[in-house]
Structures are given as structure tokens and as C-alpha cells.
Length: 420
Image (tube, rainbow, N blue to C red; front, side, top):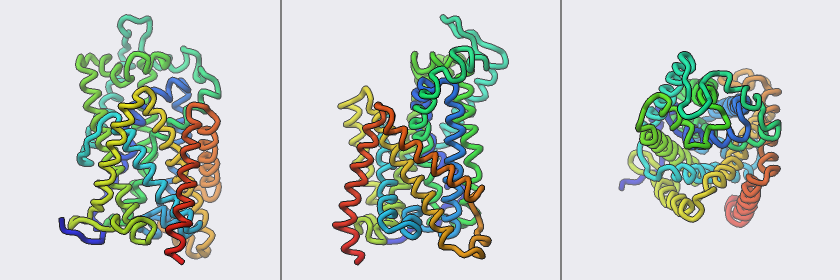
């Protein structure tokens, strides 16, 4: 294999959109949505919208920095420059940790690596389910062997919009946020984008539409066709939709969709982790072997490491098959929210360092400054607090604390002496 030490600016708008879709739409939606619905009932729609607004603000904050200074290690670099070198170190490594954990979650559905073009399969499947669902709602459908019928009334006739109260509504946020994890890969692509000032804003401005289409509208259709308290109790909610549409091989169709979703997400995770590790290795914050790339500009060492890590997912699935997804999802949520929090804080730091004239000349400024970023920051702190509040997700907070402690030790023993 011919080796170089540079990345190539070969990504166009289409590549970035598909990578973002690949990373953000995976098992968190196809599997995790059932858990969120069981916790919150129909109010999960509100949770997806609230989280979606916060995440869009995070992406705009990231976009402001990425367009202003497009680099391969993205928010790790921004955290180093605008918060502290240690913050950048923990942010970069925690993002890689996030990608590893999310990939392990995806491998519980499928563990083989393929190309990013598979994103179109799950996108097409979701759109088909939404259209089919609206058809069912329009013409009406009685669910066989039950007293239930399809219709929007299912959103309030089975215990109300908040059937499990505020506690259930709050509890679902960790699963909801996990479903959005990985969307920050848009910022990581900045270092390889042909025209960051055009491609990055276009990709980020499409985020609200994606959230409404792929999350809110999909879950809305699910809970309109089936009573929320039946979703997930007799198989996957997506299987139930296919069966309602008269597709006898519903389970097989769903398995194909979930497999492609997992494969696509894993591919994006490997891409994101590879580019982050490359940027950190160049700056001495990761082993130098991660700075080597193939002739095509691919950081192949990360691909090898990630492929090895995926075997851990297979092992965990074998050892603790009952709750492996819930455990991994909670840990991934902590890592995701930590990275998003650092992005927001870095953007605050950048604004403090820029002059008034420089701020006016920003090509892609964050919306609603400074109120919107402050509210998004408060939301991230709230999610981390809720992870620790509920017993089921509390172990993830312990794992996160241990992870950050290990990074602190590594920084003091390895990075700091070399930088000084």
C-alpha cells in the first residue's frame, strides 16, 4: 500500500449529505425509537423536536467555526484554540470514543463494513413508510386480531399525550439524543471539502428538514398507525408498519433496511474517527501512525483499528445480549453530548477572541446569538444530569467519568511533556 501523510479535498456537497445521513440515521432510529416511545408515549414527538432544535444550534455553532477555519480535526482543534489544549484533547478523543461506541451499537444489528451509498436504502425505506402510513391514515385500517384502528386519535386516546407523566418524557431524552449522534461529522468533513464556504452551510441548513422528515414525521406515522403502548411489545414498530401495508415478508424487509442502516452508519463512524485521529496525530495528540494515509488519502490505520473494535460488539452481543444495546446507547449519549457541549463552549471562546469587525465578516454566523447557544448549552447539561438521575442510564455517567479521568492522566503523562 502506497502511503502519504495528507488528506485530499475531494468531498462535494453530495458526499457530505450522505455521510451526515449515514452517521445520524442508524439503530438509534430503527431500534431505539421503540424504547423512547415506551418511555414517553406520544410526547416523544415533542422530545425529538426539542432535541432537534438544540442540535441544529450546535451544528450552526460548529458551522460558524468550520467555515471560518476548515481543518481536519474540526472541533478538537477549535476546543484547543478557544478553550484549552486539554479541552481539545478530550474533545477529539471523546469523539473517537463516541464513534467507536456507536459503531459497536450498530454492529449489534450488523457487523460488516460497506460503502456510504447504502444511505439511500434507508432514506428510501423511511420515505416509503411515511407515504404508506399516510395512506393508511387516510383510508383507515383496523389492526387484525385487536380492537385498535389506525388514526391520529391514537396520539391521545391511550393515556393522553403524556401517558407516563413528565418523568417519562424526561427519561426518553437520552435515547432521543443517541439517535441524533454522529451528525457532527459535517464539521469533520470541512478539511476535505472542495468548497467549505458553500458545502458546509448547505449541509447544516438541511438539518431541520432531515429532523422533521426522518425522525418527527416517521415517529408520528408510527404512533398514528399503532397505539403507542403496543409499539415494540409485539416486534419492531417498523415490522408492524410493513405488515399493515400487506407485505408478508415484513421481517425480511426490515432486516435488510436495518442492516443497510447499520452498515451505512458504521462507514460514516469510521470516516469521522479516521479524520479526527489524523488531525490529532499531526499535532502530537495521537500516535503518529494515525497520520499515515493511503495513496487515495484514507487514514487506513483507523480503519484497521475500528474493524478490530467491531469484534468487541460481537463479543458483547454474545455475553450480554439482553441489554447490550441500552448500555451502549447510554454511554454513546454521554460521549455525544460531551462533544456537543465542547463545540458550544468553543464557539463562545471564538467569539470572545474575534473583534467586532471580524464577527461582522463571519460567512456563516450562528443563529440567535447569544441566547440560542446559551439555551443549547443548558440543554446539554440537562441531558447529562438526566443520564445520572435515572438508574438505568446512570452507569453510563460512571463510564464517562472514568473515561475523562483516563484522558486527564494520558494528557499529563504523554501530551503535556511533549508539547512543553
